[in-house]
Image (tube, rainbow, N blue to C red; front, side, top):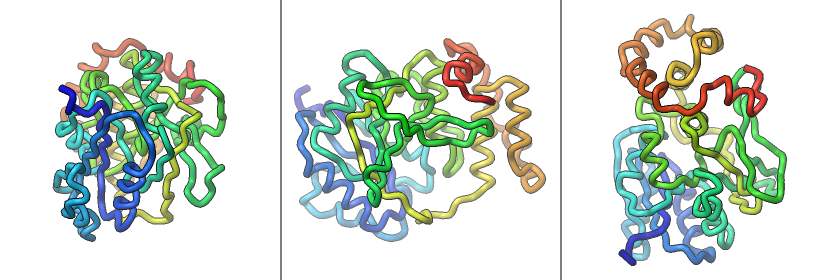
Length: 292
């Protein structure tokens, strides 16, 4: 049992260039009292960015290869190979500080919360820090800039450095398995956590630096983004809010979107979620003063 890591860092990768190597080397270079493993999920990168892991120097890093699963399901795939009691899902372009793991998971270990984020700073402007997200009146995510001394609740956590206990992650069925390539996966899992009776907290004394890129190294598709947005709405919102979400997306360009969604498992899953959750979305919107 002593060889089972306490923490599993799960890093999905898609055409990251040098970033993934920098992230792994940063993770190994900082101090920690926690045993941890690193699981890299190479989701069909075409730039050879993970080839350096074939070197014996990185024999403590486990790499799995997947085929275009997308952000949510690449993370889920990594979790199935993880041995840790706590998962930390990390973007492949981060820089860490001493004892960041220890301090990030402490509120989870103490039972204060079930999932956490550090403050996430911009590598170019380290003092520009976001402390989780909130939604505006259009459900557009906005960084929370408010820093406090002690850990505190936020409506949305960033998936770029998200710690969560294995037990809770498995209970909520992980990241949304029906999502397409990219979009809304961080928001959906945060919303699901709160509605199922779990808590999402910021640990403001921990800071992780993030490389914010001008463009992504993979193609973004508005159909996928809109599909995920509506899937989240159908899973968790009442009819009035679903209709508001429909008005927000480009249905005139995506006539098949609703049809595809209805042919999926969405209604069956919605029924399951409605039975499982402890709060409804009215409670959530009111608690976090989200005007939607």
